[in-house]
Amino acid sequence: MTMFALVAALLLMGIMLGAVVHLPASVSLVAASVIGCWLLVFAVRERGRARRD
Image (tube, rainbow, N blue to C red; front, side, top):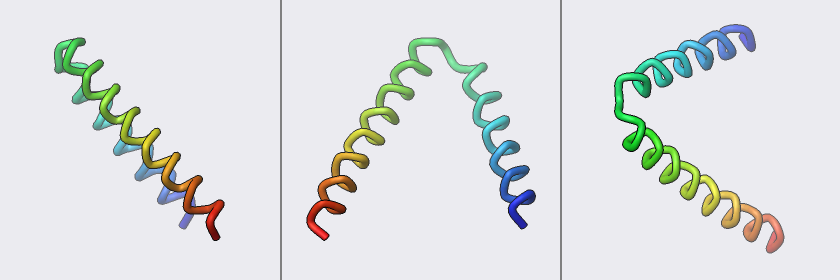
């Protein structure tokens, strides 16, 4: 079961990276920074939630 999850994750990552190649570099950088900010906010919120419990 774990191997299927790994294969599915690699397949999805390959599809996403293939889509990024067709976008202009500026669009890719903006999208990457938005995703990075979102992950940073998520990590800060989760860390605060873990300290309260």
